[in-house]
Length: 478
Image (cartoon, rainbow, N blue to C red; front, side, top):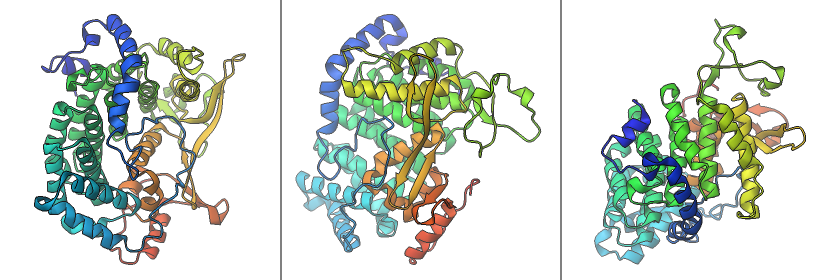
């Protein structure tokens, strides 16, 4: 992929104020974000949500996922396959439906496919469902119907793992991102595009293409999709960009330009945008280090000048620096340190706490990319040292997951946004999309300190669901 900034600003797309004058743009962006982002854009994003899917456009990017043991209101619904089948027929019978009827049918589809792994139920109707969802998205009869249709596409994509979804859905989703009159719809479509790209068969070329498209949105503060200074759209683009980037191994030639664009967003007046940009920066710094090869010696790592910087996960391979993620790391560290210790009265206590914890963790990684996300990370003002523990999350009642790398964190955050309280159900019922995106070890609660890998989890799921005819392929870490 060629120079990102040149590709963005010479592609005929809208050029942001940042491209013309970064300093002037920063002042404008900060003022506009404080006055409009929290009010107009966030309200627009939440308007279409309902009780069954409230928060699916959540702006939470903070490290608050301590547990995925959410209450599942569908836990005792043994008749859900029949109920889902009935709603599928309602969705497909569009000629006899009303806007309100389609809204309710789509909301029910989202609820049932979120809390249940419904691959067997939806398998025979995947193509017809995508066609029906596409009609709701194109017609945009109401904001709620459009958003629920986009959510339905997401949940079908993560359930079906159909490699034709991306090529069929990308044009209509991209057109919605550009042309919709609702910023809430634009943000939902951005998230939907990311899910279809990862789980719908885009391949690496498709992923890189969408990363450039999303970076255009971020670099222009939403102006490239006619959502100028809309924090919700920019935040969605940042989140999805990180999710897509976690799938790309070699990002050396593009890292400098991408980090610079994300640094610009650290000046945003919206804390969720700042944190999402910071997480992407940490991910790119992490990518600049890779495991030591068998034929390499320690002398190849010029950056390790202190035993203090050894990676704390002693079970993993030693990581060596391969390239500079950004040309001016000291200046970036100063900016991250300011955010990690910010004490202005212009932001709420909640946002201040979130900025402190997240940017202390992000700064730790930028200073030494061997460190992944840290929980309860803070900066000791006297010694200027960072402290915290490796981030772990509880999954259901069965075990814990260690999130020791940023790529795991951004993937977990993306999957958690899509599946919400149904994450554990999909994990333990053997959803291939979930299992293949989180190749991590688990400690089962009823086995003391014994470790059980993903392959064992699949076997347990297979025993509980004898009707399933497949076994997901083991990963390299199994």
